[in-house]
Image: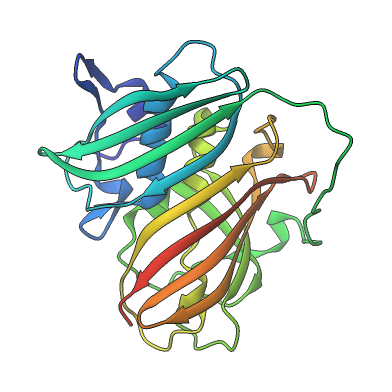
Amino acid sequence: MSDLTLDTILKGASSSPDGITFAVSENWKQGRTAFGGYSASLLLSGARQAADELPPLRSVLINFTGPISSPPLVSTRILRQGRNVVTVQADAHCEGKLCAQGTFSFGVAQDSHVSQSLPAPQAQEPEATEDFLPPNIQLPINFFKNFDVKLIEGERPFTGADRGYVRAWARHKDPAIWGQPEGLMSIADVLPPAVFSKAKKIGPNSSMTWICNFMTEELTTRDGWWILENELSVASNGFSSQVMRVWNTDGDLVIEGMQSVVIFV
């Protein structure tokens, strides 16, 4: 299958009584499976079609149960439709086997006197920063070609750094997906696991679970650019836990999350 943009794949999805089938082109692969952010975006697309006039997205729970190596069939069901929150479950099956599952909470805004922000750390403009992956680094991550990624702070993967931390600018190369929730869902996972900055040799990884809290209803940013941050909390016995954040170009925190990653190095 030729390379396809995320926008093309979402618009070209095939619906049936059993669910929605999405393509998996080679440019969205990561090894033998689809890129995790891409898989999550397909689940979100299915969930958003589960009901009419859903409130804004507030929280996401993703469980990567198996490889998505063939076009997944995404089926959904509404777990609860309350006065304030609608909860939707989306399951992706490949050849009859569950390969990913997502729980999406959509909620109406609430009146509250409590407010706290977490502004983005200062950063140079994208044009003043280096490409995240220099030309001489070859990694088996086909999906990376769909994005522009610029290093702001931290170390690149497999450099044996003292700290597992990286902050970068990122945007989809295809402007058609800018501003779409699925576009933000996929780009939020584009950076390699923070633990890889500490690794001294190249090896694969596999995300197990991912939670994302969406802190604003406005999912747009200037010229498609987002600031991404991955920070390692702990790594032990081949498993790691990291905190992940996404800010827009105004410095507003849009997503805060946590991910569990299996590391094979």
